[in-house]
Length: 133
Image 1: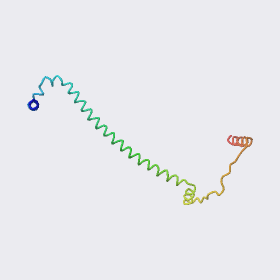
Image 2: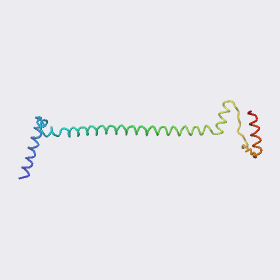
Image 3: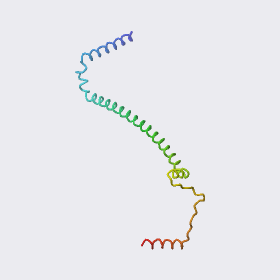
Image 4: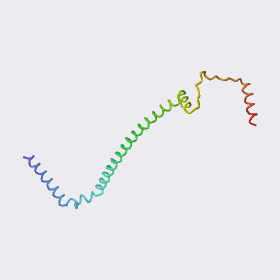
């Protein structure tokens, strides 16, 4: 029987609390007035929490947009790089220059390395400097 009376007491207390809230008695109580700074602090914390949530969502959207842009730029880079590598092959350069009327041919023999002794190098360097003066 005590459980029924406890349940009934709880319902009565809840009903009284709701009625005092509807009548506005809660807003003029001493408890509310004494705890007003704390309640204002809690309200401020709630607003900051909501603001930080929106800022985090904006940051996530920016990160996703930057990831997509990075993927696009990376694929564009790879495409341009492969096109450039193909266009700068010796055979492709010869084709392009022939289309422009320069009629160049590929060398059949590889280039030869010119080796000079120190004496020959000094002689060449001296002649080159004498020509500048």
